[in-house]
Length: 574
Image (cartoon, rainbow, N blue to C red; front, side, top):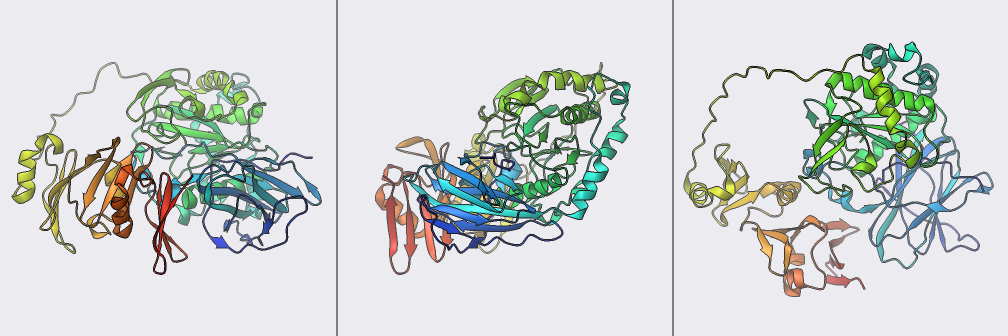
């Protein structure tokens, strides 16, 4: 059997439901087949998602001339997915389609705050499939307690523009960065001109969901690989990157492509997240450590073999360029504070000392950038330092600062003022004036540690900055389904690590295991009857969803459903 012709990326699917049909394959479980969507001639990705079952093989016809990215999402237990591809009459061996261990926005960032609820589902890595006409996906654990298993394919045509990029990009010299003078003499201007811009690789800017955060400078770099087969052509690389942009924004819910820069095996350098050429743009490449760092990812897998000399040289040049721009030493150390996140090794607020040029595995539970590439980071550091004409020295004397302006004071009044007078230690000082609200009527005032809301029916209550506030924003604050807060944040009696806050029409719960989730209406009433956190369901794990007329609320050990015909039903997992 030949190896799988795909590239693994840290991505998952876009939800666009299609119908499954087709005969079973001999000597395999029942097989579902799906007709592929046509990719756009201009290289714009086309998406399709199909429902799948753990006891069936899902068959996906694909166009062998396209780059097609395959990914999966599910709820419940990991079904241990496997994938194989066919080129003509020859099938590859079954290989793992593992659970994703990639980065994502820092937990407390503005980018994380706007993530859709669906982005919290379990998800596989996603595999760009090349030069194949059929893909099959199956579950190795057919008895897994898995719900809502869906397989997504995103197809992207390789265009004439891609071929032109491949022809004109030219790569870099394969000499060592510490070798011939031509490598050392390249200027920042010349290097910038060699980078394939978003416009050149065909980024669909309409996919960008939100403005990304920026910092005033950068302290260092995280090195990544996308994983998967290295058998891609120079012309296929831009199509793969377009697929990454679609997955990162439309399924993951990130603002933009996660990496600041990408490099292919030919040494071609690509602009990743918009603005990264000129500014310290915060990416989504290293969960908890995106702020103040730059993410560079090389296309391919480098567990047993290191990237090509051309790719390594381009990485050294990118590091050197940014070191000169921001004044950091490629062979030095940096101290970062963890911003939290699901794959981070370090808790929110933990200060960590790292190499200025670090590998993704240094801060996250991942093999990235592959052992063979990770072992090359020493030479990447020294090679990059040799390319920096002169590291910017730290200032010997602090610049004279103008006297700081006196902080502005804001009055408090009425019910909000009374609450503040009793709870100033909890709220901190006011940082804005009281604002009136309409439909529903009420008021709020911002304080250093959160916001005090007031309405006639609920009184004045404090909403702290944090994940409960993130969930409240997700349902449009007081204008959404919850209305105004009707209590302050409280601790569950029988789950000391978990918190909740009541609102006029519902509740938001939070725990380190489940995150922040909204529950209201009949589901909340039923949960109360079952005993809240002591119930057989445990805590909510997602906001309410509606699919095919069925309302659903997920919990740690099961879920509830509602239809007009059946009313509320409780489903527990064994």
